[in-house]
Length: 141
Image (cartoon, rainbow, N blue to C red):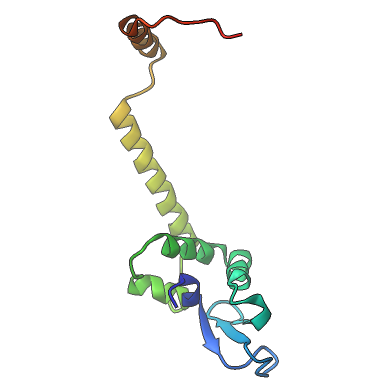
């Protein structure tokens, strides 16, 4: 099972009614919340949309963790696994603060690389480029 959605669910033998279901059905119990059992039927051809949708609808921070795990090709850390299994609490406020800090860091990096925007400097450089290129410009119809 290589899809990280499986970190958030435990494979169980019976559905929410305590029955095995039809041949080919697979049942997964969420590690989170009220530990709902979701069934992937044979007709669904192993589609994970139900599992992903459940996570996205009922546990948005965990859905973001799922997206993070999916985007990385490396195995998850023990902390990330414990969060997915519901053994470690994910502090949403800390998550938001970390996200803001990352965005701020990227903004500072861009500002440092390019400097603050200066319209006059841009126009001067544009004029120098136009003169240096010496390309004839045609009027667009």
